Length: 107
Image (cartoon, rainbow, N blue to C red; front, side, top):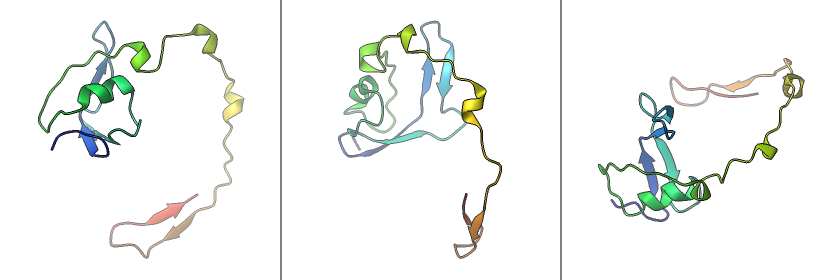
């Protein structure tokens, strides 16, 4: 199957910076799954994957304008920890009506 618009795609990846330092990877975990052509991944990577097939291996360099844009220090905000307080009064509601070995729970 070729990667094309409206196809579900599953990729293993390793993201590195210019120095080769690993920033993120699917190695040892689940692959990244997305719907191709729906804007769910950065445009530069989506363009590089277009037309590829199962088993293909590629190395892609994505420029800022095809990813998240250039770094802008003015957009950095330091937030206090108190802005992320979590209430500890959780209520659990669980259902055991699902198939064996599963349960549906919500907070």
